[in-house]
Length: 401
Image 1 (cartoon, rainbow, N blue to C red):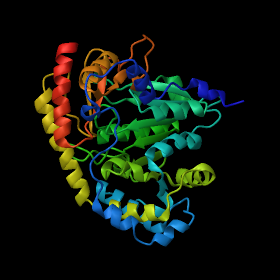
Image 2: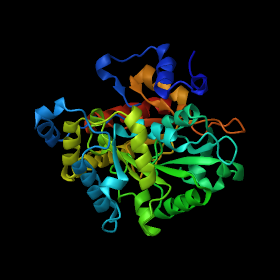
Image 3: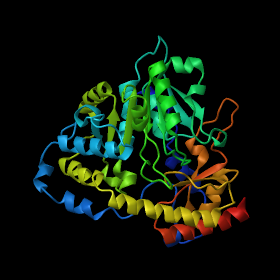
């Protein structure tokens, strides 16, 4: 006996990649191999992390509080207010903020919070971009909702427009996931697009789930955020939940520290849900997180390293494979014609692991998979190694496709 909704899940993209490459011999040594398939930041974590975690060792002997500490919630509320220049007192840490164990866990649990058994007497829907972060799909399926995929392709500026969803899907919508900067495409939703999405969510009474975990890795200017859009609409947070974490911002994916901020009623209910099954943050982790959210110096240095790598990528790949310089995040989204074929060639001849774009998307009603032609490359390693791998990848792609 088991939950048969599991049968509706596909293999996770990295499991599919392992299966794809299992029968593909690699011609290069293990020392030359490089994994550019997963968005795991490899920059050194800031020194203040180590010093803060070492303080007050007795706190490891305490059960962590589900809602975190008042100091953590205030630090997050302060960072949000500074980052998006929000009106004073718009964000109350005690009403609008919860700590989460990284954004992935919370993005999945959000569907348990937001998806009712029925919406307007029918099966609820969950709107999501296509391509998409696989957690969105899993969350919808495991909570009995129908996933509705909206194109996030070159034709749409690589961002979804939920206003174009079928009227029936909007009537049944329980929630919509919006990732900005987008994974895998690196595009940013404008303030106007965010306002439109919030207005639509309130009109049809669904929850806008803004996944902003890449918000602090950007090229030119800071991306707009959903809370900034809420401020522009008068300051109400109704029907909006924003998720972010320290994983990308501070290069500490192993810390598993993030937050959710938004609608006070939903935050209260989320706290109740997480008390029953959420992974809570140890007090030393909360204290280290406070120090990281309150420090921008290491974030600026981190961002500068990514910019240097995008400079190199533009020089190496510019004018090839549909290269464009992403507005945010640390992925390249390259049009290579056949993502699986390219992934096999890069592994076999160069020891480079990349993710086929088709593993991050679903075929539409014409059987067209919008990610089929693409590969996603994560620029997470140090600059010299990344540039060498991109040079190697260019040579292989130019001769193999």
